[in-house]
Image (cartoon, rainbow, N blue to C red; front, side):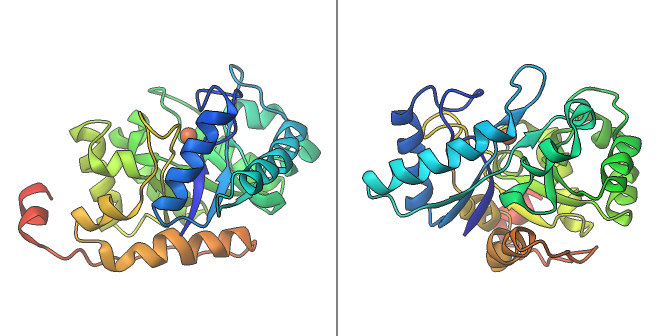
Length: 251
Ligand SMILES: [Fe+2]
């Protein structure tokens, strides 16, 4: 599997504090069946991660993984705050795309109101494609799901996160995650893991819990690989949820 959202780099944001913590997280990723991880530290006013920092981090992490004999590929990236991204020049933004390609991982606003649609249009107008991280956790999108539909119609693709679906962020987030899945508005699935303990990796189990085990490959491998290759994804991804007993109780 390919996990396109992971705060694996040490001491940059609210991920691991040191290399030891990063290697424990990397080991957990590999043990969970992930072969490639995008390093996506926050790039925000609070955590102003620069493209050069990510580039250096990729090199250092590859070296550390090799030394520790952990079988995990890593590529560069960032989880961009909308306002922060809009203020960055193009050459800096290019260095923060997923693996240096055309896709930016944009954090869905966790504030009640944000100029998401005009901001996305501005970034797309500058030639970047947008992968929207954890739309299920965004209060403004929960309140007005039509925004997600319009964004997807305009070319944005979405990334649901494991904790959102599993219930780590509460029932409202979980219900909205299922609603987005059932509406065909989810294109990829990622861990947004921050460490091996508190916010650990693991992609397969939350999907299986909700009868989506048949789609693990599509959401956690095929589509992420296409994004890393700079390709576009279909607008709607109609997924069939197997309605087991648990699915009926929880869905
Ligand atoms: Fe994140």
